[in-house]
Image (cartoon, rainbow over all chains, first blue to last red; front, side):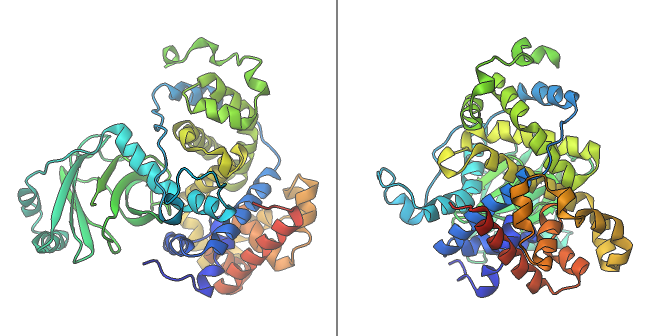
Length: 262
Length: 198
């Protein structure tokens, strides 16, 4: 159900590869990309052109101490498992095909599928996904005073409301409550660490087209409810990452929690 | 901390330093720290040069470079050589993270842009300083000089300055739609001049 690429969005390819779009525009552009092979091919070529600009800058030798600091961190920095990227649409129909991928298909995989596969695979690696709910009612009732809670209640009261709880890899739990009919979801986090200055938690709606920013929050108090910004689509997955204050237009770190609604 | 790091990390073996970045990245994906060290040595001046160009601040540039290399370590398993070269993969990641940091740390710069370009002149001048100073590669320099003045300024501010199209629009006093169009036709012209094809 992605919007057809309009001329307006078609003009965004240069700003997109230069990382000059706002988060909303970026999400809209990526969504439109799934519908246009020509746009995907153009984006791939312009992204490679941007790399040429980067390589034209005079190299600067970083301080020697930086190398040591980075290497020191490797032992405590987990690597994502190698997982076959999930593929969608026409590409998925012939996974074993000997026919080489077209440039357009490569572009599609490269620019639209990586964020989702990265997040989902990371969740699998960390063993984040587990079943079972918590007493959502009790959690929500504790928040009744706030406007957020009333929106959470509305989602929870919808006839098709569902919920799922996952562990947050850095500590605590996250319970997603959603209603496909309302196209809304909210997340109730419990026991999550407060972040240092300059960082924020960011929520994402994830689908085959990529990651769409759905708002940021800072952990305050033991339990907190956050209504996600934007519309949820059936089958969307929700992820949480740690980002620089103000949020990012696409995830820049591995997720600390992922909830599937499918 | 030091105890966690094998001693041989400092002495990269002779073989590793002759491998392609793609092969090094493939080995990094298996948890090979020697290959990671070799990849760092082969690419860090490029990545650091790019990050420093955008952030200017030395301490922040170090922080972001560290974030980039740890992300490379974490996500090397997702690198697919059929989709592009290792350097392109890393430089795209580096530019993205540097821009994210610019946006996160410079809410004050947004205010500067709203107030007006005059108050913002020092940063603007250094970003649009002439192509001769900015660009080392003769080939890219020649391609940049074939752009129109507006295309060149817009591309320079966006890529080398990390400015959003809104900021570029304010700085150059042209409508946002025009900036987007110039960024696109400017990049297409560069692509053709540089012979980039997928």
